[in-house]
Length: 202
Length: 76
Image (cartoon, rainbow over all chains, first blue to last red; front, side, top):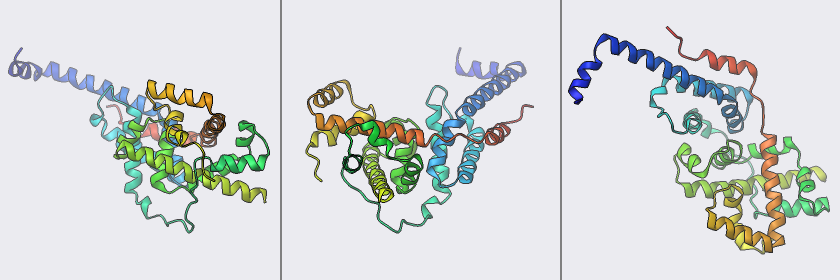
């Protein structure tokens, strides 16, 4: 069938109505899938911003926009990444970059700095025990102290469970930048944790 | 303190993030097999990552879920 013939035949009232019904079904399906991801979206949002209220607002804005622009999602592609891109863009638009700069430069040491510090403190060789010296609140605080650019990639990869490739697309940065920010961000995180642990023990 | 093993500095992160290809993965595993220094630190990093994930597993407030559902396009 040529395009012209198809265009004419599809414009009959009957096929038009069918198309509308089909689109409504597609939209409902899309909305349900998006809602199923809410827990994961919230978990990432919660660590990107500093308060629970902000996280709730951000997730609501993300969902409002996702529902509005559902046609721009290509079925079969990564829906979670699509949603997360809306979320991170909104978060940047909200001017979170204006947030005050940390008064102290985050500590950044070698990859094994935290391990070496904790091992010395714990006097143990058991990795499980060593890691348990860290408190969960301490981890959350340390993560909040990591500057945004670095924290975004840590949150997407470690908490959102996204691949480097997905994180690169979500943040619209090259994959090499994802890797270097991740590396540096984790060093900062571990530096913070080491300082907090030593301060706690003192 | 200077890390004595540059090799691990380079492959530890993509290894832990499961981003190495098969050949790189085999190479990293072979290295960990023979380097106890890196092995201990690798295990620590793995546990730390799990710990970070657990610490950040905050539940979504149930009322937020209802608010999100309410944002859906009304069926006409």
